[in-house]
Length: 326
Ligand code: 13P
Ligand code: SF4
Image: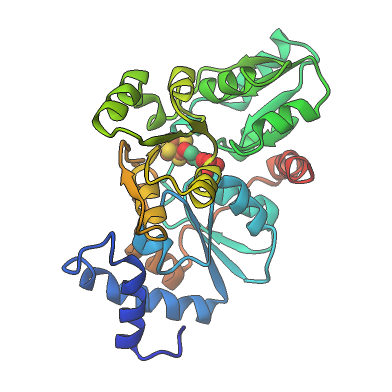
């Protein structure tokens, strides 16, 4: 890709996103994209991008794209010296846990997550006191310190499997109350929840889904399990961001609504010009802190390096690796 002349390169990259980025916007991205592609080669760096990243990042500079589980798995592979996480801070921490000797950069260290903010290691200590002997399953949307206080991690793609893998009649599942309740509805295991919420997905209501179906007859509705259980119940399918993308690829619904972060629809629509995407979406302000300009700056300066206290890193890594081993 780097061997192409700049104009040819730009044309071919714009071809990937022309359905979702208007031509007048493209020139504002070109210089950063060209610099990032050059810097990646110079630094032996790769860019991992979450499914919620903007299309110019997702389709034009990322080496690996996916949901939290896929990014964690990919972070454990490969021989790049530098990993740039085009996602939020907990994703960069997970990449660092799995690659202690590599340089992991987060282009904006303020890119947080309302779920990660909702719980501390001390809260887990109190939960363990209240429920002695009950294992703690921790959503990856948490800090490394919270992971370190947990028995095992999960993502939205494997939460039920992780809960059932423990062979316990009861588990504590933190911090997402809605994910915990959605898992509880699918398993015999008793699930004790925390009160964390995703600030994007908690906005959707069952009434929104009813109105959407009225306004867009025949639309297939896919929801993320961070939505409230009544929203999940009103949807046709619930799953991780990657599971939603797989559903669209396999079933090709003529009209589909992805009840999740806004950029997902743009990123998926690029691959399916024949499908109509209804967009009942919300913006994640944390994901949107990551821009091409900040990715370029991180690669130029190696600023934004993620470090993890070694006392925390060992047990946090064990909780993530236990999940990946399943
Ligand atoms: P996924 O693991 O489904 O990609 O979700 C991550 C996330 O932050 C959703 O809000
Ligand atoms: Fe966190 Fe919600 Fe943003 Fe995902 S969409 S990173 S859960 S705030």
